[in-house]
Length: 312
Image 1 (cartoon, rainbow, N blue to C red):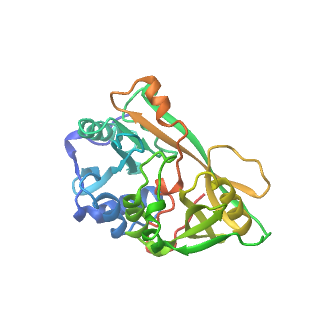
Image 2 (spheres, helix red, strand yellow; image 1 turned 120 degrees about the horizontal axis):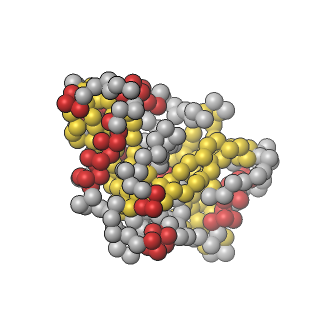
Image 3 (cartoon, rainbow, N blue to C red; image 1 turned 90 degrees about the vertical axis):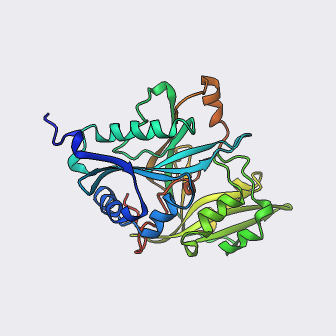
């Protein structure tokens, strides 16, 4: 197959805030969703580490990889990158443009970090050109529950601003990423905080908190479990109460579930690419007993001014 273009026609560079319109056009072409300027700025320009790197033909953005900076929940709290907004304009796919872009991004970040977290979509399972031995992929199941039974309420909804009062209870012993108050403040209070709320549960002097999002799709209003903090001992009991109290609840599961009132929405793959410096035992230990939440992805971050739509 003859190439549609020459590499000399392409410009590879880091995106600037002024490139928003080009980013928006490419995002819509690839995902059929709008993306707001506020989201673009929030995700890639709110700290000195995160960035987007793209490929331009003339002045048109035709491919992009977004790298979001985040810390690991380990003893060193190492900073890593989580890859987002990986996309190539359809007419230029199969031209090795994304492979070249991945290599450029990998070479730019490999001096600073040694692993990358990825949520690959169905059309892109790229792992920066690394062999399978240097990557780990974990399968997750996205479900929506449906229930007509309304039990006695054992949980309480509170405003997302209550995070300030609960900061001493925010721990991240089980989460894969470091989840301290700084993380929660940036993730849930700095961008569209009106969409989120906290669900509180108390049992035997223990307290558990889920962060939920009001989400509306073709089926109406439902609730998405994005994060958890507080007592791990009563988390499963808290989750069971939520299932009984909320008519429609969207959540992520490590296991495939077989219940009549659970609808499988999608299968997601969380990947880790080891760029350097990890032994096989260390790789296996990295994900051991760690939790991943929907709040770690961009799936349910509203990227447009209109209501968020689930396209499953």
